[in-house]
Each structure stands twice: as structure tokens, then as C-alpha cells.
Image 1 (cartoon, rainbow, N blue to C red):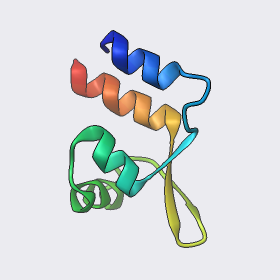
Image 2 (spheres, helix red, strand yellow):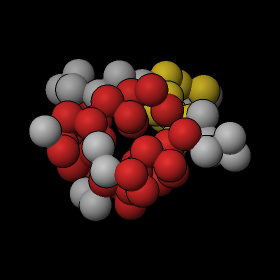
Image 3 (spheres, rainbow, N blue to C red):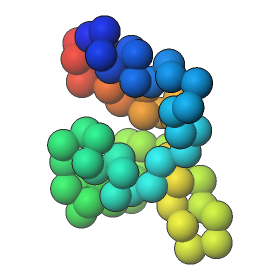
Image 4 (cartoon, helix red, strand yellow):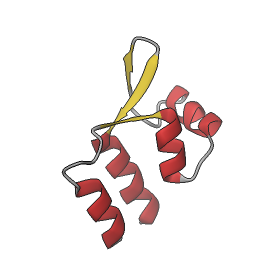
Length: 68
């Protein structure tokens, strides 16, 4: 994981939960590709009403795995 990514993820003001749209922008993927990964169980998520939320820890793991 590069230093900028570490700084962004470790910032005290950083979000604890991400929406599908935010995750897609952050990872440089499309929303449909993120939703497909959610459906296949490749990304863990929580539902709050109709909202799909991805925990920060999951995002950190996704970023770490993509850089390896």
C-alpha cells in the first residue's frame, strides 16, 4: 500500500462506511462491477434499510490486495 493511500485510510476524519458509489470511485471501478462483486460475495457489506454500506476495514483490505 502506498503512503498516500495509507494516509487517506488512516486519517481521523476518514469515513467508517462507504456507499457503492463511493467505493466504485475510490477503486476506479464501475458501480455495476461493485454490485456484481457484492452479489457474488467477493465484498462483505451491511444493509441499512435500502442502503448498501461497506465497512472501512473491507475497503482497506481491497486496496491492500489490489496493490500486491
